[in-house]
Amino acid sequence: MSKIIYPTTNFKATNTLTIERGEGAYVYDSNGNQYLEALAGLWCTSLGYNNRELVETASEQMSKLSFSHMFGGKTHQVGIDLAEKLSAMVPVENAKIFFGNSGSDANDTHIKMLRYYFNAIGKPEKFKIISRERSYHGVTIAAASLTGLPPNHTHFDLPFEALGVLRTDAPHYYRGALPGETETQFVDRITNNLEQLILKEGANTIAAFIAEPITGASGVIVPPAGYYEKVQAILNKHDILFWADEVITGFGRTGNDFGCTTMNIQKPDMMTLAKQLSSAYMPISASVIRGDMYEAMIEQSANVGVFGHGYTYSGHPVACAVALKTLEIYERDNIFGHAAEVGDYMQKRLREFADHPLVGEIRGKGMIGAIEMVANKQTGQAFNNGAVGAFAQQACQTHGMITRSVAGSSLAFCPPLIVTEAQIDEMIEKFGKALGDTLGFVQQEGLF
Ligand code: PMP
Image (tube, rainbow, N blue to C red; front, side, top):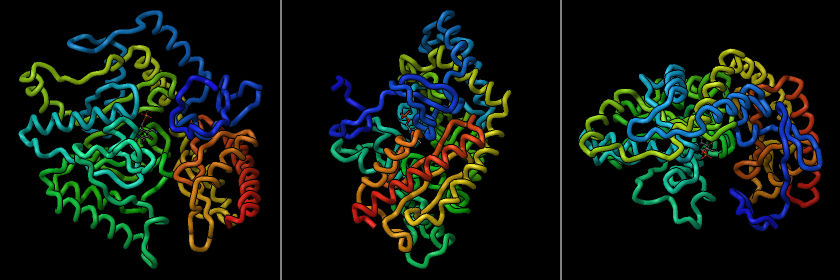
């Protein structure tokens, strides 16, 4: 038994897989077995493995300047260049960017910046944040409090009350609709619930609404048409900021540059980016805010003496260099266009499983998707524990493909953006075999 305390792991489970190396869209275990990486690691290795340009960029930057911080007046050119490029890419107006190391710490940064900003403009009571059921925003004390998934709360005494996290409906029609309710009625009802929550709490106490445009860890929920239009109209009416958590959906994942574009979200006020920002070659994240929010904080930081927030590795030069190169490759090689095309193909092929007796719902856009397995196809009744999802995930692995079961019994598909249609075919074939094995398991266990 190793000395590692494994993250997001059942400590009692003893089956581990030692991954040794990666190449393109594949990883190899310590016995030399090949696996198609159908989840791009953890939704992050967009350019695949062993990209020589990224490796050489990191190596060159390490030789030139392996570390430099950004506290109290220090900066470096590669960080300035990265911020410039990102600022021009994102749909946030006059975007200003704070660098961190992970999606979770970037979300923590955002919570603190919201407080700092509203204190600066004389509205200290405006600090609460609306987050949705079944959302995922990370695992630090604050980010886990935003997250709306029970395993991230239970036995950690979370959410942390003082943060003022308010919860609203998950926009999942398949799981959340009332009997006989149409999609439009569902959207009307849950957005009305949102407005009632705002009225009950008082808009003057609510800073922002956070959403993953399309969720990841909670099972790839794609909200119905019209949902974000209604949400944004309500937020605008009550002067509440829209905060897009694009840690998974950023950079070409959903068929466009950002999930906001795909889901018709207009000009978010804040954005969280990580993962594909560097194709996961180095840990780096970005907390993006509107330029005028930053302007409003300038005086405050002068009064306090300093903006008292920053990580040792905020703007790590090697991470910045790798991220900058990643963005250059996205542009030069039209990676988002490629991902949109192959993503359409993937969505089409995933939907071929619609008639399978185990399949309840097939979701996704672009190069992100999920297939939810259910105990009863007619009623949509869910399996009452994670055993079926865990079996299917293991069956995929047996057939030479890595994916994850999320939200119980959904299998997620989120391959590197560089995959070819032939590799999507391979993914579909392997998944088909795993689904067949899973049906056998379900029948044998009498779970159907
Ligand atoms: N936000 C979203 C939408 C995520 O999917 C994740 C990670 N899967 C996070 C935040 C947290 O990022 P990290 O694991 O890098 O802390």
